Every structure is written in structure tokens, then in C-alpha cells.
Amino acid sequence: MTPSSDPIDQNAETSESLRFSPNFVFGVATAAYQIEGAVTTDGRGASIWDTFSHTPGKVKNGDTGDNACDHYHRWASDLDLVQSLGVDAYRFSIAWPRLYPSGKGALNPKGLAFYDRLIDGCLERGIRAFPTLYHWDLPQALADKGGWTDRGTAEAFAEYSATVMDHYGDRIDAVTTFNEPWCSSILSHLHGVHAPGKKNLDTTLAVVHGQHLAHGLSVQAMRASRDTVPLGIVLNAQSVYPATDRDEDLAAAQRHETFNNALFFDPLFNAQYPQAVVDALGDRLPSGWQDDMSTIHQPLDYWGLNYYCPHYVTDADLSSNAYPASKAFERPSVPRTDIGWEIDASTMTDLLLKLSDQYTLPPCYITENGAAYNHDVVQGRIADAPRTEYMQQHLAAVAKAINQGVDIRGYFAWSLMDNFEWAEGYDMRFGLVHVDYATQTRTLKDSALWYQALMQSRSQ
Ligand code: FCB
Image 1 (cartoon, rainbow, N blue to C red):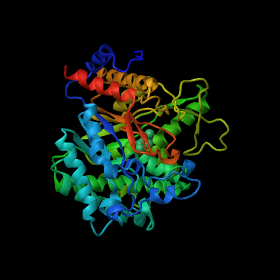
Image 2 (tube, rainbow, N blue to C red; image 1 turned 60 degrees about the vertical axis):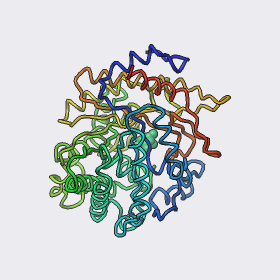
Image 3 (cartoon, rainbow, N blue to C red; image 1 turned 120 degrees about the horizontal axis):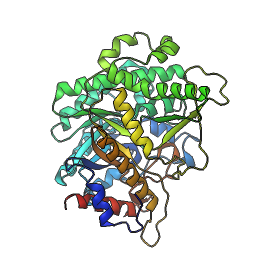
Image 4 (cartoon, protein in one colour; image 1 turned 30 degrees about the horizontal axis):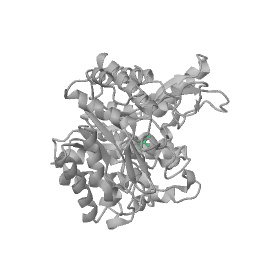
């Protein structure tokens, strides 16, 4: 599929949308800390991302989510934008510290009211609401008591989940417990890149387990509240390849895949940790972990895949090949987006086929896919043809997986608009809609016009 320099090439759009059934859900996605701003407004408590982004050296340019896209105040016009794109659904996250400023205890009515406005605003505009409970903004008060290493955090998460379902359950279309637990455990407690910025394997294992437990308790609590809303979890499964076919690289790729994928899929879908992880690290998992496996393994209505790029792995220069040692291999001379992530849509199809082969999974939604390109506004236009091309290629990859039997029910573009890209700050722009942070002006990029035309072509 070749991109068109004209963002509204009707023929291309029509043939593309015909790949998907009329029930296939198209949407856009965001997350609370990345867009809301208003971090001290209406009683919101602090989260670990407030603390982390205000710690010098943690986020590029010292950027924080203090103002972000000011979505807390601009939610209505932002929902108008979502509606204008013609999508079916909006995936957003609820900020736990807005509902429970200290993570548990007193519920904050003003925080609750904000998501009432947002969810009712979706309904009024004919947009289906797909909230996520945890997109990384752990209340700082809980972090101070041990965060996800403390079982009390999992219990507090279940209470917060029940509140969400009790209060909003009559108006929402699906609830995701966790967004990418890999990021909120391994990336943030082993690699130190995301909040809270730790680098400790034992802590990481305790966090992985604590989040799994919280997911299980959350699903139980939500089903007890209302059993009609579909529940799921979103995973950023990696499509892993060895850098070469040397035995050492194959072994490193295998280790990498087990530690970064199976560590999540096996407990959630098979009620067990991967045997290789138990063999290597079992004595470092929190004691009594075996007793939690049946709680963790809850029947789910869907799972979400967030997919951006393949991962090549080598064992070169490793001083040890013990778990979880592996080393990223940057392939030279391959196409990359502005954030440096390799572009290869065929790896998305491969991953979807492989996972549905390895596990018995519920239906899948592509809950995030998109590209960082930092095009400027030139005379009111953002000519981001590479983003459109990226999305066309990945939608085709999704269609290919469906044709080969994978049950995929929807696709959410990341992201509705440019936003606070975590440790990258505001430099990396993933939006379909451009945000001028000084004026908070939103401008549809060419890719947004393309997505809009694609949505329109469905109803023709
Ligand atoms: C994912 C996150 C999302 C966004 C994209 C680019 O890992 O879920 O919040 O940052 O990457």
C-alpha cells in the first residue's frame, strides 16, 4: 500500500475500510497524566508521575504533566474533536488519585464528577467509552507505603475498581484494568526509565506479582459490582527476533521473550509463571506467590495489544547469560520513526499469529498503534504523510491477522493528540491532532484527515 500525498484519497480509504467488518471498532486513545494537566485541581492527589517528572534529570527538558494538554478544562472541545473524526470509541484512562487522592479511604466527589462529565460527554456524542483504570499514575501515598510491592496496594486497587464500576458501570463499554504492566514493572523498576525510576530485580518481581494480583482482585471486584461490562487487560507484547542465528543470540532472544512476554501472559491466561523464570528466579518472587495464581487467572472478555515496533536481541557483550539478561540490537539502516523505533508492520501480524497459537486468548483489540513524527505546522497544515503510511501499513497487518483467523475486534490510534510522552517529555509527538502547548491550539494533521476519511468511507 502506498501512501497518498493527498490525505483524502477516497479510493485508498474505501478499499482499506472494506477489510474490516461493520462491527469492527475504530477509536482513538489517550491517558490521564499525558493530557489532563490540572494536577492539583479539585482535590487530585499526587501520583508517582508528579514526583518523578519533578525530579531533575528524569524527563527530557524537565517537562512535567502539570499542564499537558489542559484536557481537564478542555474535555468538551476535545470530545468534539473525537466526534469530528467519526470514530466509534474513545479509550482514555481514569486518574486513580483524582478519585482517591491518597489511593484509598475518602472518595473525592469532584474527581468522580470529572469522569461523569467525560463519560456523559462521550454518550452525548455517540462515542463509546473504553476507560482504563491504571495507566501508571499510582497515588504517591501508596507508593510511600511500598507501592505495588505491598499487597495493600492491590487491595486498594480492587476498591477503586469497584467504585468505578458501581458509579460508571451503566455508561461504559469496557474496562481495562492495567495498561502495559510491563512498563509499570520492568521499565520502571528494573530499567529505571519510568516512575518511580528504580533499578532492582527483586523489587521488579514483587511489582510484577503485585500488579498481577491487583488485576485479579480488580476483575473479581468489578464483576461483583456489575457483571455485564466487558473486562480486559492491555499488554505491550513484544515481537522478538534474534539479531543473528548464532546459538547465543537465539538463547538471548528466548530469554528475552520469556521474561518480557510470558512473564505476563502465562499467569494471566494459564495461572502459572513460566517454568524458566521459576527455575531461575522463583526464590526471589514474593513468598506465597503460588497461592495467588488462581486469583490472578480470571476469565477475561478481551485483551488489548499495544504495538509499535519489533525488538531484536543479541547476547553480545553480556557478562552473564543468567535471567533476565538480554541486550537490544539496533539494526542498522532500517526505517525508523522520529523516536527511533523500527517500522516493520509484518512483525505485528507475526506476533498476533504467534500469540494466538501459544495461548487460548479472548478476543483482541489493538488498543494502541501509532507513530512519533514531529512535523511542524506550516501555514496551518501538518503534512505528516509518514504517520498515515505507518497506520495504513499496520491496519493492513491487522487485516492480515484477521484473515488468518485471529479474532480482532477493534483498532485504537495512539494518540488522539500530541501529549506528554513520559520520559521523552513533549518532544515526541504521537498525535493525529497537533497541540501547540503555548496556546493549547489543536490542529488536525493530514493523518487525522486521512483517519476521518477512512471512518466516513465505512458508512458509504
Ligand atoms: C505506550 C503507552 C502510551 C504511549 C505510547 C507511545 O507504551 O501506553 O501511553 O506513551 O506508548
